[in-house]
Length: 114
Length: 111
Image 1 (cartoon, rainbow over the protein chains, first blue to last red):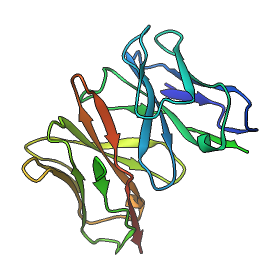
Image 2 (cartoon, chains in turn orange, yellow; image 1 turned 180 degrees about the vertical axis):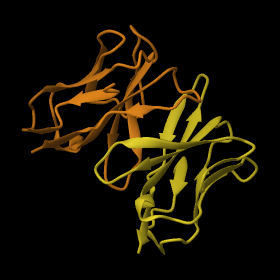
Image 3 (cartoon, helix red, strand yellow; image 1 turned 90 degrees about the vertical axis):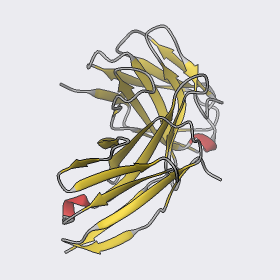
């Protein structure tokens, strides 16, 4: 049982380049999330998807887009990367949205934008 | 004022000691609370949910004080393996649904 998987694990981009971070879960969860984690700060929610076919902005959505491809997969796209987007990105899933259910996290993607 | 605040630490305590840390939250409409553990360069993992009545899981005890708007985590008989960063998480539901992570408290257990 893989849980939540993310690809790639590491990425270096030049300013202005684009890329898509992939996330998949095999727990049949309805809700999925993308966070970023910066030193000295808590995880901040970028976007979330309550269920297949829906997405909503979180706290820091600017510069990102998401796609809930199906129930399993939720991707995060950076259209034109900026140095301020250097961060560790975590994908997570839970049975239901923003509830008392536990969130399960993927191993993270370490992104550096130069 | 941050919506969720934690003392960043580090708390450096000897093995076997008891250590406690708090997390304060500013929104009284907050409805669910959790403690997550994050090891260095790893993903966060749920340690325990925090219920109104408090809850205990082995050496770990979590409590909620709604009047003063904080949650606490107590670790008894600390082990070297307890060294990690502990994140508190607060959920608000409804029209302004939010999930807010604290920036974490670093704990280091020394032999």
